[in-house]
Image (tube, rainbow, N blue to C red; front, side, top):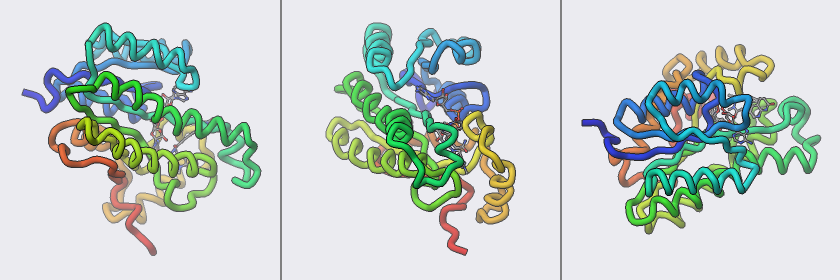
Length: 256
Ligand code: NAD
Ligand code: IMJ
């Protein structure tokens, strides 16, 4: 008996086996959930398809979240194949590389729009579609955020603004969807060496810095985010909604 036996989950944000979304997928799969996956463009299909097929997934679809028609197609397929949905995982973020190195004040209008479209609005669009498939059965929506929304983290820049808006979206979506027993929460993860982190100059130093200062005196593992997501996806967290759960070895609580 798994915590998620018979549950259907769709995962947005797997790029490779290091993705936080993949660690979450493994945790949900081990608990008995059936998973569907999307990938952002043909380049990533060759990475995502073998991972997904390896855990028996049948639904593997392209979805660039800046394209409404691709989002629609994903949820139409989920409706015809599964007839409903229980869990949505949103683990997507993107900003132009130069906007993560230049001073924040230099962010262009186009760069600002792109970061908030991909990293923030996508959560609203996907949650709206997911909620239609969760009608009458309830559900759990989970997104990924980072402490750069609450405090200045050098170079996080426009992503910090996108994550602040994402966390506020979690609260507003939780309020809207609560009456349908659809819960909406975020996990604020500590730094993990994924594709989204690999391109950041000085990332290794950031890992050391965080590990030295965190109460647990270490960094986190993606699997630990997976287990927190299992909690938020399952009935263990039945009364938790609108929450930002920090999975960061306690780093965020430290003032000095
Ligand atoms: P990752 O690179 O493995 O995942 C990011 C995903 O975003 C990729 O799968 C990519 O394909 C997807 N994506 C980008 N643009 C897209 C688009 N237009 N349409 C659809 N998908 C798109 O890196 P990750 O670290 O696993 O990131 C997942 C989430 O976790 C992100 O929201 C990130 O902000 C968050 N997060 C990461 C860390 C960290 O240190 N790695 C810490 C806290 C939060
Ligand atoms: C990203 C930038 C600066 C500092 C950072 C990060 N720290 C951490 C991250 C300290 C942990 C990773 N993170 C939490 C992200 O959300 C990353 C998002 C991201 C990364 C890239 C790199 C490649 C690119 N665009 C990106 N857009 C968003 O071109």
